[in-house]
Length: 246
Ligand code: PEP
Image (cartoon, rainbow, N blue to C red):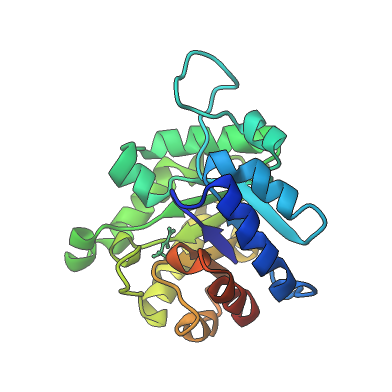
Protein backbone atom coordinates (compact mmCIF):
# COMPACT_ATOMS: atom_id res chain seq x y z
CA UNK A 1 0.00 0.00 0.00
CA UNK A 2 1.75 3.11 -1.21
CA UNK A 3 0.81 6.70 -0.39
CA UNK A 4 1.84 9.45 -2.79
CA UNK A 5 1.58 12.79 -1.02
CA UNK A 6 2.34 14.82 -4.18
CA UNK A 7 3.15 18.45 -3.17
CA UNK A 8 1.48 18.28 0.24
CA UNK A 9 2.86 18.38 3.80
CA UNK A 10 5.77 20.33 5.27
CA UNK A 11 8.29 18.54 7.51
CA UNK A 12 6.23 19.61 10.54
CA UNK A 13 2.96 18.37 9.02
CA UNK A 14 4.73 15.13 8.12
CA UNK A 15 5.77 14.55 11.75
CA UNK A 16 2.20 15.25 12.88
CA UNK A 17 0.79 12.76 10.31
CA UNK A 18 3.01 9.94 11.55
CA UNK A 19 2.33 10.58 15.20
CA UNK A 20 -1.35 9.84 14.42
CA UNK A 21 -0.81 7.18 11.75
CA UNK A 22 1.84 4.96 13.39
CA UNK A 23 -0.31 3.74 16.31
CA UNK A 24 -3.18 3.01 13.88
CA UNK A 25 -1.12 0.52 11.86
CA UNK A 26 1.18 -0.86 14.54
CA UNK A 27 1.43 -4.65 14.20
CA UNK A 28 -0.23 -4.66 10.76
CA UNK A 29 1.74 -7.12 8.67
CA UNK A 30 -0.68 -7.89 5.82
CA UNK A 31 1.16 -5.64 3.36
CA UNK A 32 4.20 -3.45 2.81
CA UNK A 33 3.47 0.20 3.58
CA UNK A 34 5.41 2.99 1.91
CA UNK A 35 4.79 6.73 2.00
CA UNK A 36 6.16 9.15 -0.60
CA UNK A 37 6.37 12.66 0.90
CA UNK A 38 7.75 15.68 -0.98
CA UNK A 39 11.57 15.66 -0.99
CA UNK A 40 11.78 18.40 1.66
CA UNK A 41 9.85 16.19 4.11
CA UNK A 42 11.69 12.87 3.57
CA UNK A 43 14.09 13.34 6.53
CA UNK A 44 11.18 14.17 8.80
CA UNK A 45 9.24 11.11 7.56
CA UNK A 46 12.25 8.81 7.93
CA UNK A 47 12.82 10.04 11.48
CA UNK A 48 9.13 9.61 12.39
CA UNK A 49 9.02 6.02 11.07
CA UNK A 50 12.47 4.88 12.27
CA UNK A 51 11.36 1.96 14.45
CA UNK A 52 8.25 1.00 12.47
CA UNK A 53 7.54 -1.22 9.44
CA UNK A 54 6.64 1.87 7.37
CA UNK A 55 9.05 2.67 4.54
CA UNK A 56 9.66 6.07 2.96
CA UNK A 57 10.22 6.92 -0.69
CA UNK A 58 10.89 9.88 -2.96
CA UNK A 59 8.51 11.01 -5.71
CA UNK A 60 11.20 11.45 -8.36
CA UNK A 61 14.96 11.35 -8.98
CA UNK A 62 17.39 12.50 -11.63
CA UNK A 63 19.58 9.82 -13.20
CA UNK A 64 22.99 11.48 -12.73
CA UNK A 65 24.86 11.09 -9.43
CA UNK A 66 25.57 14.82 -9.04
CA UNK A 67 26.30 17.88 -11.18
CA UNK A 68 24.88 21.08 -12.59
CA UNK A 69 21.22 20.01 -12.59
CA UNK A 70 19.42 22.76 -10.72
CA UNK A 71 16.39 21.62 -8.80
CA UNK A 72 17.08 17.91 -9.18
CA UNK A 73 17.80 15.22 -6.57
CA UNK A 74 19.94 12.12 -7.13
CA UNK A 75 19.13 8.59 -6.03
CA UNK A 76 22.03 8.63 -3.55
CA UNK A 77 20.71 11.83 -2.02
CA UNK A 78 17.31 10.23 -1.46
CA UNK A 79 18.98 7.24 0.20
CA UNK A 80 21.00 9.54 2.45
CA UNK A 81 17.80 11.30 3.49
CA UNK A 82 16.28 7.97 4.58
CA UNK A 83 14.30 6.87 1.52
CA UNK A 84 14.32 3.25 0.37
CA UNK A 85 11.75 3.54 -2.46
CA UNK A 86 11.12 5.94 -5.33
CA UNK A 87 8.24 6.64 -7.72
CA UNK A 88 9.29 6.71 -11.36
CA UNK A 89 7.24 8.04 -14.27
CA UNK A 90 4.21 9.22 -12.29
CA UNK A 91 1.64 10.67 -14.70
CA UNK A 92 1.97 14.14 -13.16
CA UNK A 93 5.66 14.06 -14.09
CA UNK A 94 4.91 12.68 -17.55
CA UNK A 95 2.06 15.07 -18.36
CA UNK A 96 1.90 18.01 -15.92
CA UNK A 97 5.26 19.17 -14.56
CA UNK A 98 8.05 17.65 -16.63
CA UNK A 99 7.05 15.92 -19.92
CA UNK A 100 8.98 12.82 -18.85
CA UNK A 101 9.25 10.23 -21.58
CA UNK A 102 9.77 6.48 -21.52
CA UNK A 103 13.53 6.59 -22.10
CA UNK A 104 13.92 8.99 -19.15
CA UNK A 105 11.76 6.65 -17.09
CA UNK A 106 14.17 3.84 -17.92
CA UNK A 107 17.24 5.91 -17.02
CA UNK A 108 15.65 6.90 -13.70
CA UNK A 109 14.70 3.31 -12.87
CA UNK A 110 18.25 2.15 -13.64
CA UNK A 111 19.74 4.92 -11.48
CA UNK A 112 17.38 4.06 -8.62
CA UNK A 113 18.31 0.39 -8.75
CA UNK A 114 22.03 1.17 -8.93
CA UNK A 115 21.69 3.17 -5.70
CA UNK A 116 19.67 0.45 -3.97
CA UNK A 117 16.28 2.19 -4.15
CA UNK A 118 13.19 0.14 -5.00
CA UNK A 119 11.34 1.82 -7.88
CA UNK A 120 7.59 1.83 -8.46
CA UNK A 121 7.33 2.41 -12.21
CA UNK A 122 4.03 4.02 -13.20
CA UNK A 123 2.16 3.65 -16.49
CA UNK A 124 -1.30 4.59 -17.69
CA UNK A 125 -3.36 6.06 -20.48
CA UNK A 126 -4.85 9.55 -20.77
CA UNK A 127 -8.61 10.13 -21.03
CA UNK A 128 -8.54 10.56 -24.82
CA UNK A 129 -6.71 7.25 -25.23
CA UNK A 130 -9.14 5.55 -22.86
CA UNK A 131 -12.11 6.91 -24.83
CA UNK A 132 -10.52 5.90 -28.15
CA UNK A 133 -9.96 2.32 -26.94
CA UNK A 134 -6.18 2.80 -27.06
CA UNK A 135 -5.36 1.73 -23.48
CA UNK A 136 -3.53 -1.44 -24.51
CA UNK A 137 -1.57 0.38 -27.22
CA UNK A 138 -0.39 3.03 -24.73
CA UNK A 139 0.58 0.50 -22.07
CA UNK A 140 2.47 -1.65 -24.58
CA UNK A 141 4.37 1.41 -25.83
CA UNK A 142 5.20 2.62 -22.31
CA UNK A 143 6.34 -0.87 -21.31
CA UNK A 144 8.49 -1.30 -24.43
CA UNK A 145 10.13 2.13 -24.09
CA UNK A 146 10.74 1.93 -20.35
CA UNK A 147 10.55 -1.27 -18.29
CA UNK A 148 11.58 -3.57 -21.15
CA UNK A 149 15.03 -1.95 -21.13
CA UNK A 150 15.80 -3.36 -17.68
CA UNK A 151 17.77 -6.56 -17.23
CA UNK A 152 16.05 -9.62 -15.75
CA UNK A 153 17.85 -9.02 -12.45
CA UNK A 154 16.71 -5.41 -12.40
CA UNK A 155 13.12 -6.33 -13.29
CA UNK A 156 12.99 -8.66 -10.27
CA UNK A 157 13.52 -5.60 -8.02
CA UNK A 158 10.79 -3.33 -9.36
CA UNK A 159 7.11 -2.82 -8.63
CA UNK A 160 4.80 -1.64 -11.44
CA UNK A 161 1.78 0.61 -11.11
CA UNK A 162 -1.16 0.93 -13.49
CA UNK A 163 -2.48 4.45 -13.10
CA UNK A 164 -5.04 5.53 -15.70
CA UNK A 165 -4.59 9.31 -15.92
CA UNK A 166 -8.36 9.87 -16.10
CA UNK A 167 -8.73 8.27 -12.66
CA UNK A 168 -5.98 10.18 -10.85
CA UNK A 169 -7.34 12.84 -8.53
CA UNK A 170 -10.68 12.84 -10.35
CA UNK A 171 -12.77 10.69 -8.03
CA UNK A 172 -13.46 8.41 -11.05
CA UNK A 173 -11.97 5.10 -9.97
CA UNK A 174 -11.46 2.45 -12.66
CA UNK A 175 -13.80 -0.49 -12.22
CA UNK A 176 -12.11 -3.61 -10.86
CA UNK A 177 -12.66 -5.21 -14.30
CA UNK A 178 -10.95 -2.36 -16.20
CA UNK A 179 -8.03 -2.31 -13.77
CA UNK A 180 -7.70 -6.08 -13.89
CA UNK A 181 -7.62 -6.16 -17.71
CA UNK A 182 -4.79 -3.61 -17.81
CA UNK A 183 -2.81 -5.42 -15.12
CA UNK A 184 -3.21 -8.64 -17.11
CA UNK A 185 -1.90 -6.93 -20.22
CA UNK A 186 1.12 -5.54 -18.34
CA UNK A 187 1.81 -9.02 -16.95
CA UNK A 188 1.63 -10.44 -20.49
CA UNK A 189 4.14 -7.86 -21.70
CA UNK A 190 6.36 -8.78 -18.75
CA UNK A 191 6.07 -12.48 -19.60
CA UNK A 192 7.13 -11.85 -23.22
CA UNK A 193 10.22 -9.91 -22.16
CA UNK A 194 11.22 -11.45 -18.82
CA UNK A 195 9.54 -14.87 -18.77
CA UNK A 196 6.43 -16.34 -17.20
CA UNK A 197 7.82 -16.73 -13.68
CA UNK A 198 9.05 -13.14 -13.47
CA UNK A 199 5.70 -11.92 -14.77
CA UNK A 200 3.85 -13.79 -12.04
CA UNK A 201 6.17 -12.49 -9.35
CA UNK A 202 6.16 -8.80 -10.19
CA UNK A 203 3.78 -6.78 -8.02
CA UNK A 204 1.42 -4.48 -9.94
CA UNK A 205 -0.38 -1.75 -8.00
CA UNK A 206 -3.51 0.06 -9.12
CA UNK A 207 -3.69 3.85 -8.67
CA UNK A 208 -6.50 6.30 -9.35
CA UNK A 209 -9.00 7.61 -6.76
CA UNK A 210 -8.59 4.66 -4.40
CA UNK A 211 -10.47 5.27 -1.15
CA UNK A 212 -11.50 3.19 1.87
CA UNK A 213 -14.97 2.83 0.26
CA UNK A 214 -13.70 1.24 -2.98
CA UNK A 215 -10.55 -0.66 -1.92
CA UNK A 216 -12.31 -3.96 -1.21
CA UNK A 217 -13.67 -4.43 -4.75
CA UNK A 218 -10.28 -3.63 -6.26
CA UNK A 219 -8.32 -5.89 -3.93
CA UNK A 220 -10.67 -8.80 -4.72
CA UNK A 221 -9.14 -8.92 -8.20
CA UNK A 222 -6.28 -11.45 -8.26
CA UNK A 223 -4.40 -9.28 -10.77
CA UNK A 224 -4.17 -6.35 -8.31
CA UNK A 225 -1.34 -6.67 -5.79
CA UNK A 226 -1.88 -3.39 -3.98
CA UNK A 227 -2.67 0.27 -4.49
CA UNK A 228 -0.88 3.55 -5.10
CA UNK A 229 -2.99 6.16 -3.32
CA UNK A 230 -2.83 9.93 -3.65
CA UNK A 231 -5.49 12.04 -1.95
CA UNK A 232 -6.69 9.38 0.49
CA UNK A 233 -3.16 8.86 1.84
CA UNK A 234 -2.99 12.41 3.22
CA UNK A 235 -5.31 11.70 6.10
CA UNK A 236 -3.99 9.24 8.75
CA UNK A 237 -7.37 7.62 9.33
CA UNK A 238 -8.19 6.99 5.69
CA UNK A 239 -4.69 5.72 4.86
CA UNK A 240 -4.77 3.44 7.92
CA UNK A 241 -8.17 2.13 6.75
CA UNK A 242 -6.62 1.39 3.33
CA UNK A 243 -3.67 -0.43 4.89
CA UNK A 244 -6.09 -2.57 6.89
CA UNK A 245 -8.26 -3.08 3.75
CA UNK A 246 -5.29 -4.41 1.80
C1 PEP B 1 -1.59 9.21 -7.38
O1 PEP B 1 -1.16 10.30 -7.02
O2 PEP B 1 -0.81 8.36 -7.82
C2 PEP B 1 -3.02 8.94 -7.30
C3 PEP B 1 -3.47 7.77 -7.69
O3 PEP B 1 -3.82 9.94 -6.82
P1 PEP B 1 -5.36 9.81 -6.34
O4 PEP B 1 -5.44 8.60 -5.43
O5 PEP B 1 -5.63 11.08 -5.60
O6 PEP B 1 -6.20 9.63 -7.54
